[in-house]
Length: 444
Image 1 (tube, rainbow, N blue to C red):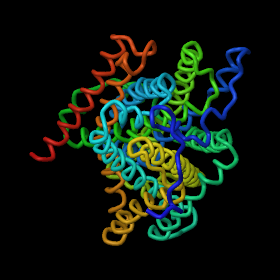
Image 2 (image 1 turned 180 degrees about the vertical axis):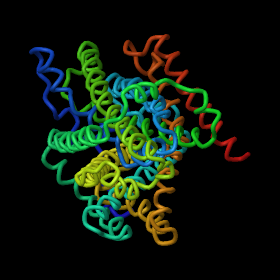
Image 3 (image 1 turned 120 degrees about the vertical axis):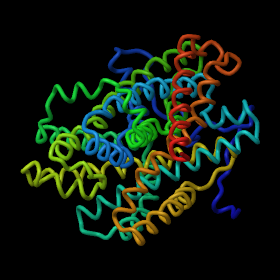
Image 4 (image 1 turned 45 degrees about the vertical axis):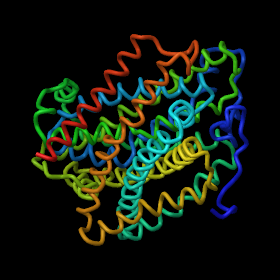
């Protein structure tokens, strides 16, 4: 491979460089101070991870789920979010306790061959996620500026350089950018909820799980898509790396303290993501399902119908702005995740711009093909399918994560308790069972 595309990675005694060495331990953490000051010092990684819980892939599954089945799938969003809180906390714990991200830990614990297989699975998930980002951003550009989908998809290649510009300023600038866009998305959906005025009783009832979700193949397909769109595999790798940007003392006491604050950071951020994620489905249920528009699946169709059905011209504009912010945000985190898994599994580091161009080029091709042959409908179906692919790849990240954080040989004194391990294994088994059910339904 040309040397201009590969950069050297300094290695430590374990043969592995720190995760994201250019920003490792670069964010100062106060040794003293009140709880708010310390929480703010650790706040950031959780919000970057939360981006994956409200990206364009979530929009597709939530809009389709709300339009077809009303508020029923809110229980799936709630369950997925609770799963995410636990799994992301475990990912952060792994990174802080071991000094390795999930990819590095897998390479050390399972060996080169297993690492290669896990890397391929993770790359498939990142490409599926990138497809969703390309489609979402292209649709947003189409809605706001009238660009055809193929042109918007092509323009998304330029966002390759967005992360590079932000990283040059420092990791805190990158976090601030992400958090600002998250605030835009949250504000936009607060406006949408206020305009839609959904019935409170029906919304609360939707958070109660129903057996129909598993027995109805169409509902199960969307439920699996919601799980895949919410608990994204690459987010586990990402979180285990970016928590190490904090300059906490690398002692047992310092690590314990860091685990506590990192867990608070991710739990608060993912609670915000839960409300945004649920808001997308609630708006779809209140506006489309309630008006008999149960066939709405495409983001562009949802945009076109919002203002007429709500009687407010601003509704569609706010919707498109939130979608653009969502696509841009997801671009940043997917880029970082791709860098982390390649360096951790393969011990190979491409230049960031080269890595991003390769991943984005792979994602743009199916989007262009779908829009060329099938039009908007093809991209909508591809968007939902990409989220199902993410769910099918999820066990390849969850199972190693749970196994590692429960292993005292890996985690030392910071290994999880038997109770937490049992709960984590139960979630892993649930994900495997849902995926198996989906495959059996597809084959049948």
